[in-house]
Amino acid sequence: MAVIFLFLAILPNFSHAAIDTSTLIVKTKQGQVRGTTEKDVCVWKGIRYAKAPMGALRFRAPQPVDNWAGVKDATAFGAVAIQMKRILVGNEQQSEDCLFLNIWSPAADGKRRPVMFWIHGGGFIGGSSSSELYDGAQLAKKGDVVIVSINYRLGPLGFMYFKDMPGGKDNFDSNLGIKDQVAALKWVKENIAAFGGDPDAVTIFGESAGGISVETLMAIPAAQGLFKRAIAESGPANDVWSTKLATQVTTLYLKELGLTTEGLEKLRQLPTDTLVSAMTRLMTKMKDDPTLPKTFAPTVDGDFLPHDILSGIHAGQSKGVDLLIGTNKDEANLFAMKKLKIVPVNEEELKPYLGKLKPEDQKQLVAAYKDYPSRNSILELITDGIFTMPSIKFAELQSAHANTYMYRFDWASKPIKAVGLSACHGIEIPFVFGTFHTKLGKKILLFSDHKRIYQLSNQLQQAWINFARTGNPDVKDLEDWKKYDATGRCTIIFDKKNYCTTDPKAEKRKAWGDLNFFE
Image (cartoon, rainbow, N blue to C red):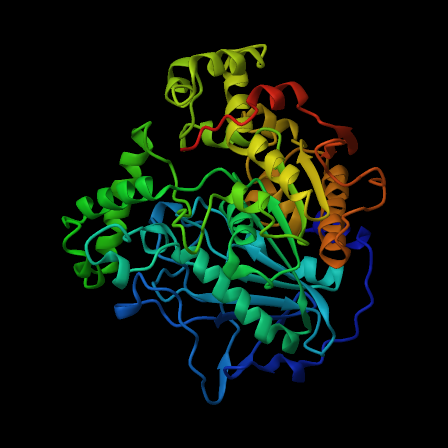
């Protein structure tokens, strides 16, 4: 604990008056909520932003909350979305009634602070906003900003596609998890001023599936005007489903439930335990079948998501939305670990991925990885194909429409390198939130350079805060962080020492071109 206190002591100080506890009861458009104080900020947890998507509302778009009388308690997190139990980090309560959000604010005082709207990751099959890794108190206090985090529907309940099935078009909706996010953003637009936030200065940010969510929200008309800036951490922008693939996965799920495409209405009567058991079996089959995706994804349905994400960005769907985007150097290392193992680690396992490409493209691509087919080169190739290159392409396209900045997170401690993780997927999260006291945070701290960890966390936090406040992430020691474009390709590398580089993977980027591992 002494180390944590030392860390807090060296952070820049923002002057805050003592919290006025009378402001903990806040009037929203729907009714009053009562919060609490934690770590010198005001906190409201488990605020409902849409009706419970249960019964007749299962597999339907989110509906506005009914008004209520009296004061609702908002001092405990709401239930997390239905998901496989092995994915849960803690002992969170699962329920279909999961459409809740949480708010951390220095004060509900009418001050118009920048708002940072966090979307958790988890492959659209797991995760929750109540993870201690995403505690927003430190960011709120450090930056004098308002932090919002949300739950949204996951797995089959959030990402099945029924439009091309009998009775599916009129009675079932698609992309429900993303539609939940839009509903939460609309709630923030209407209500966040009462919590000390500025509804016209919202920055959406997220990691992994949360990063894809950020990119998807930028590409859809329904979210236009609901946010001003966006931060996408490790979001594979290419990872969207065609209607063909979405229908295939949905059909497989129905089969696990013993249903056919003719019996969709029975889905609304099945117990949630039955839905989860079928999801578990489906995910096992998806993991073992190289032709199937390993996680869920939004569907390009031609309506809500009219085009694939990159096409939407290219067309200027998010013109004027400032972007901060980046990846971690060794993303795929996490997914190669024995307990997870959903990416190839040798040449034989890589064949289904390369098989999607023409023979001449395969040859061109592997030639760019000089140690191929070593394990490290294959993991780097997977990292680039799934994360790095789609993010570079996304940045390149958005830079034509708004201020765009790019980073890469390279830091890793010796113990983390020793177990093969290095700068793997998700490792930057505790740096962004300053949540080193968590179980994962302690692992990152283990036997590593504490001083550099705190310094690096401070730099990331300040960059994210500055970006949310001004659209420019520039912080002390990072004055060279210029805007990203297709010519300069300035990228800040966060490592033992931060530095700016130009087009850090130029040869590999050129080899990839427009090649794509996704359908």
